[in-house]
Image 1 (cartoon, rainbow over the protein chains, first blue to last red):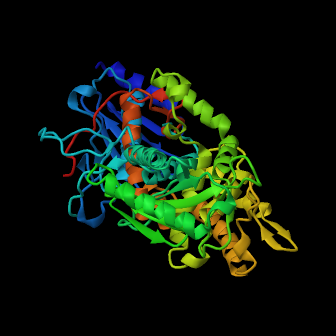
Image 2: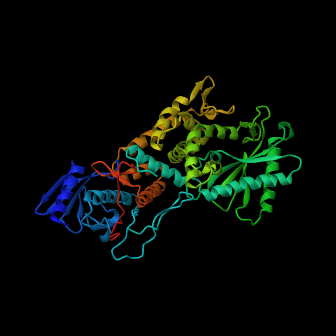
Image 3: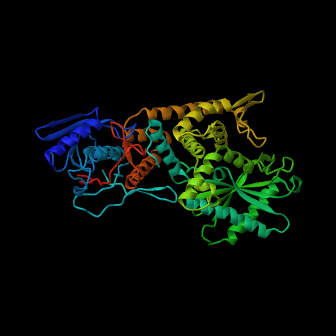
Length: 153
Length: 384
């Protein structure tokens, strides 16, 4: 990505998210804005930082992510930094507004449902590619939900 | 599934999924259908002098069955066992005894067959067939009501003294008429998706908002009157008022709110007391309210409570809190499954390229005006 690419992201983000704050300082892009996956969801203040190459870093600033019952929040790098995509799924020529931001909103949706059900329904998998555990499925014939066995907290 | 952009629309997703989770599963529907046929065929083969009609009535016929609350309980289905004789030909006690004998022979004859009933129990006004699968069948002895004509019937009552007027077939036809447009639209969509003709799609393969409205009201009723069974409003009363109040064209959240607000005005008061008349027979579904006036008061209070519970759920933010609030009113486990179903179907929307985002806060949507959510998989430790 050329330095000009960072400028392209800034212009695009300012255009599409006028209520958010988009800064570009010393070659580093910082976007801070509200995300609300559904009208019944919390509104989260999310920060995206990107040095012009590599993976944009996405953090939930407020409210703090919760993990009840001693569990840990799924699909995060740290207690507030989200894992949104596989390494090969994002590259510098992609627009953050078209990818990272929708993915973050979607992550927040599945996070709230994880709080509700105890299971992550958004798919994806772990970096060491362990065999996928049983996923929740919906039976096409009867609409019944088959839930994986709940792990102890 | 769609991803609604309003709070009410989101509540409607959870309510709709709750109705789906608690509905009679297709394999049980098919098993019940077989039983209606098999019992009818058995009775026809047994008797050369009189003919019989055996058919479903009540929630199975209406498509408004809900799973009973307690996990150990089985679905409660009804079967009308109609012997086509004159009223003067047999007393209620004789009719009930004839049907009981026939059902015993049916069980003996079907011994060991898969899906056959295992026992027949005397339940005062009816017989109850028990099955090794998750339903039982209340078999209601009946004869034609030749004075009323049409599909009217006379049912045995609890004391086997007075015939009860009823017309479950005409009632179901009336109920279907209230939702006909949506039913036909949904059947047309399913027919197109499955490349069938609309005639090949049975009614039970689709669900209308009216059916789900009745289902969620019954679920809320079951929980609300859990410790007050005697004063619990009967399903037929709820169904009649809900169908009368239903005006179509709404999501399930709006439909419930509208119905619980409009249902009280459909209760008539005459010199003979409160009346909720059957739309098809001379049957007052509120006939017990004169004797037990607290039942009407509790019914009205319950309707207010349903509305208040939904408004309360819609005023909460964060989906898990919404699900928990709805769970208080409609059952914790059904709501957990309903939420899981929403999650799975949202992931499927994204995988199908139908999930979009709209607005400055990246609200998830299925609006085609939104920005499609690009394919991706959530990476990182599932739980670190």
